[in-house]
Length: 223
Length: 234
Image (cartoon, rainbow over all chains, first blue to last red; front, side, top):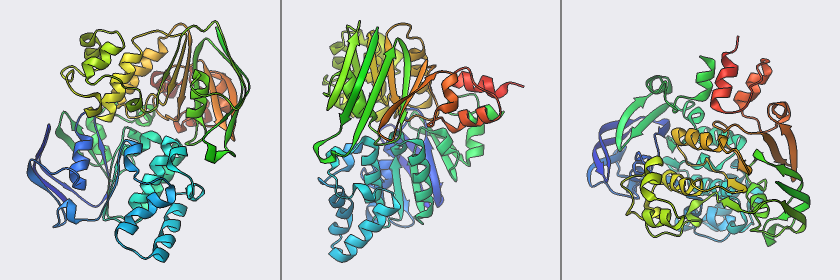
C-alpha cells in the first residue's frame, strides 16, 4: 500500500488514504492539487506535516519513475540515448547492460527510431515518450505520470496504457484530464480545491460525478 | 478572406532532413480542425501557417488577412509578464474581469510560471481570446485543460463568427463545433471536407464518433452536445 496520513502541503490536505497496487488515476479541476499530490508521492516535495509511505519506506528511499507535466522539464541530456540511459548510468550499471536495457526499453516504448536523435528536434509528444522510457528503464516500484497523456495522440495514449499495464510495476499513479482513460483504471481519486473528494472504483467515483463535465462522454452517450 | 497553401513543404530541424510535411489547400473563413499523430508535423505546420517558420519550398499566401495570432502548444514560451496581473496587462485587457472568467481571481501577484500547467493554459487562452484576429491558429489548445475548461474554451471557439480559426490538435474527447476537417497523415496535409460529410473519411476520428457512425447515427457536428444528441436518437 501507499499510505498517506495527516498529509498537509500548501493547499493540499488529506487526512488518510491508502492506495492499493494497480493503476490509479488522479482527476480534478486545474489547480486542485493533482501535481502537488504526485510530487509528494515521488519525494520531490516533502510534506509540511503528515507522511507518505510506500510500503514501509519514504518515497525518497523507494525506486520511483517520474514524468513531469512540462515535457522540457523532464530532460537533462542532449540526445535520446543519453537521456534514457541516464538513470542506469547514475546507478553505475555496466555499459553493456545499460545498452541492452536502453534498447529493450526504447523498443517497448516504440521509439527505437528516435534513439540517436537530439531532444530539441523532437515534438512535445515524442519528448514525453522519451521521458516515459527514462522513467521505466530502471524498473521502478512506483511509476508516476503527471498528465503526460495530454501531449499524446489517441493511439499513443492507448499504447502507453497497455505498456504501463504490462510493465509489471506494482504502483502506477497518473493524473489525467481524459476521463475515458481514467475510466480504465483500477481506482480513481478525485481532488477539488486541495481536498480528497472521492476515491474508489471508476464506477463509484464517476457515479458521484454524474452531471458534471468530469463524467466520461462515452458514458453520457450510452445512457 | 483566405489562407492559400501552394506546394508548401515544411521541414523540422536540420537533423531530420528526411522528415517533412507537404501541404496544399485553401483555408477559408470558419473553424478548421487539423488532427494528426504525435510527431506528424502539426506544430511545424502551425508555425509555417503563422509565418514563424519559412517553408522549405512552396508559398503561403494571405488574402485579406490583416491580423494573425498563434497560440503556442506550450504557453510557458509565450508568457512575458512577471506576474499574472502583468501578463494580463501586456495583452491590454482588464485583469479583474479576465481572471474572474478564467477562474484565476486571487492569483494576480503570482508568477505565471508558478501556476499549475492547466492554470497557465487557462490564463494564456483567456488573454489570447480576449482579442479578435483574422487568422487565429491554436496549437493543442486543449492540452492540460480540465474538462470544464475544455468545454468553456470550445464554446468560445464555436462562437467565433468571423475570420479563420485553425485548431491543431490530437484531442479525442471534447471539441468545439467545427466547419472543416483536415488531417496530417504520411507526411501529407489532407482535406477531409465539411462537417458532417467529412466525418466518415476522418481517419483520426474519436472512437465515439466512429461508433456513432457505425450505428447509422451521424452527428451534426463534433461538440459534446452534438454527440450526445446523436447517441440519444431513436
